[in-house]
Length: 424
Ligand SMILES: *Cc1c(COP(=O)(O)O)cnc(C)c1O
Image (tube, rainbow, N blue to C red):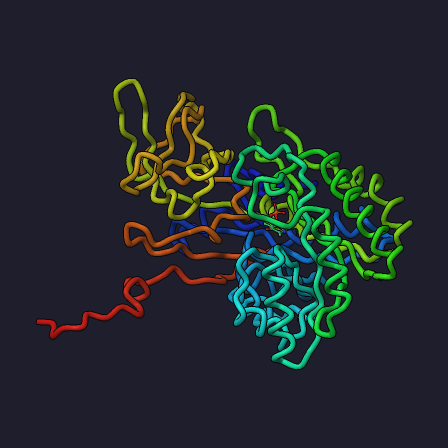
């Protein structure tokens, strides 16, 4: 794979455009996504799983920008959504409803109604209560709800942080395997439920094929039991979580998709089921960078702080999950002394940092830094805390840059608020 943001003449570029020029034109902090790289990542999935009946349902929560979703739709991807808001986004961007799967533990009746009216491919149901509610809503709507039970295979997936593990028995996600079988049997007696598939999602940023293969084996066993009872499914949904390279020491690798596909092929072929995958991070993460400008360099007591104009409000992963992102100066500073620094943001929280004890060529105020692998769970988790305006987003494609989200204005910050008394 080509480097998403190569250094040319000492300056990082995206699709032939210097990141410096993008920061000058659109301001900082700024998200930049290289769509040619996203396209390439999607192709890598298509190539690895070629020959299988595959639906790539891009996980919208990783990066829900309409322009990104629109390209996904044009490239044949569907969507994995977790809220009515994401359904709205996906449909606005032109993703066909029959390529949308709906996950999430707390679906409201309203969200179910919206999904049914749009005609989505399947609801990935996470509990018995949810299945009952889905049946009731489908009955009210006079329709049949296609669903998959999300099973919890009780696999402890080796993700870097416990918050991104979802496949063991103690999480809120899914139902135990044994219970799932009973629920499928019940559903078979309902005229408003259509058991269309089985779903599993074991976590995020998983670097080995093993846990996925294990999860597949679990759901395959369930699919065989169902088949023997006459419940014929259409698809297996193996969820997302395909790990990318963040560049942290010791994790200098990404999941081997070819190996994963090879190991999954025999089971998928035997079952003759459609395979749904829900990659999020692996499609957009490496294709994105957060540009942030140095405001001050401050010598603390035995520590150097590089204070930048973007922090946890723009990129929450470092403070929330201890996430690692490689950071580089956009323009090389020859001769700069390299030393360990903390790269910190403007937010009034000690937990507001992008990197700690990171060796960096010491920048100066006004320098631009690139925070890598920020295309997934970057803007998507941005907030207005400290009355920060959420940043702008730019995509680069075919050597051209397009603004795909304006930086928020001060007016945006108070939109919808009311002072219920006379002012002045
Ligand atoms: C978050 C999520 C995904 C995507 O995970 P990635 O690590 O971004 O690939 C897929 N499916 C479900 C159900 C999710 O919650």
